[in-house]
Picture 1: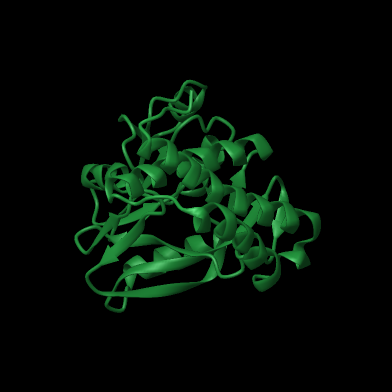
Picture 2: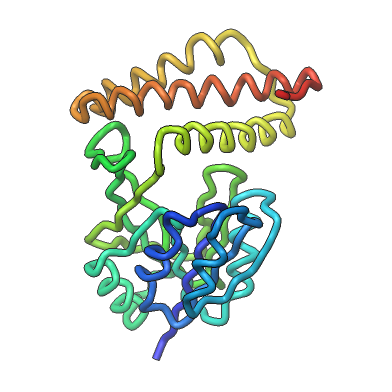
Length: 251
């Protein structure tokens, strides 16, 4: 019988970790790879039958690839701590590993929740990620928004997992700054510079794109807030890049 290793990367996920572990209880092995959480994440995770690995975070791809290399089994299911595998997707996962039909991995779509409110538009209506895959054919690439590089075809699951992206608005903003810093470092390493277009044109267009082109207005005030913060995320990235290029620190 084909077996599955589930991997959950964590950093201060005490609110999510128990439900995340429970949602992948079908896996034959569960690995929690933790970036030295300072809350109760590890204490909670330790109550379950999981393997805990502590590793200093460097970038998303390297971090996840390291965890994949520690897995016992060929089939890997990666779960962010703020995601939940639904019963319908669980059935699809178990069927897929029994009969993959020459696919080396599978996309799953996500239902996104923003501070408890379901988001149907605002750019998330087509949100999909590769979560189940054969480790010998798939590796992560990219520093911030990591993607799977595959040697083979990918299939699609019919049903969606739940994605509770942010605990509260402060958590949302902290993630924006974290991702912005990583992206700025990536751009800085490539010798990229900042000009007026990056700070005057790109942020407003990102707001327009999410709120109008991606129908964020249909999500009401939540869609408006999400759209504005997407523009803020772009601005943050280039401010951080500008500071790096000048050899300055934020604090």
